[in-house]
Image (cartoon, rainbow, N blue to C red):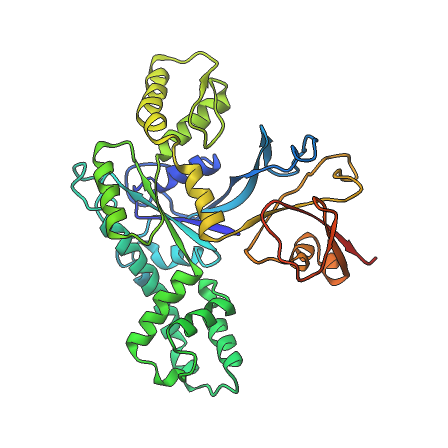
Length: 397
């Protein structure tokens, strides 16, 4: 799974990315601070199963705090997108291509309205952030349409022996956006285009197909950043009113980053996503003032900085992923004595066989059966797994 972090320049995108991953990429209030795409690891919270088995887990990746497992997720931060990005403006084609593998996108929007469409500073509240939401989605749609048009002459002249072949070839020619056959088929059915030959599609059909496929293959969650700025409150309400079908989460990337850095230095005790912190070290006057501001203007009114909420909404609600723990009925420790060392994030409707292949190709190819460790029940390869299952895979040698 890969989550793309996108937005116009100076929206706080790289600050959000740093806050989510603790990777120090350049941050500044001018366009194109980020030139190359950056990849790093963030974490989403899962209720660990160790307390149910009365053991202390030893995560191989991520970490566990007070019964909460932090499971790694890969994020990619691309340079800010500007109007005309799909035509190559601002190195737009390169940046859009960096998003091709992303399963979902986090659109970081400057909710304070203090940067215009090019990412230039303007008086606070003078820019309507709703325009940024529309602009970015239109750029993505035009990017996808451009890829479709690039191959259209050849595709529209190709005779398909079956619908399946048509879906397969269409998907292959759209590989540049990372869409799969299921997403293409779902889009065709939704638009009643499955029965129509490509040569009969109108320009409107192609545009609608591009937009709908983008919604299927690159779902978007909106991180309404800079929520603590006075002008942001009214703007966030306007966003929710104009886009009722979108998931919009208020957040403050700089607050989360500040708290994490202070915790790393040992100045405070803070766990990402929580609503409070405890001062445990010496703070200078500037640090004390900043920490108090975050407490008063972010954590108390909003109950968190929102960054962790955005990540988890993207993974568990937007994409519907579930967390699965490998285990064994004879014990939960691996060969090194580590209890419940792994936790995997799987797409919705994943089966026991899917999980076996996730663990190892041989486990899938030589699958015999699976066991639900919590209930001790045997389950078949087609058994659909649910969140926080603990599964043992039995396979041939």
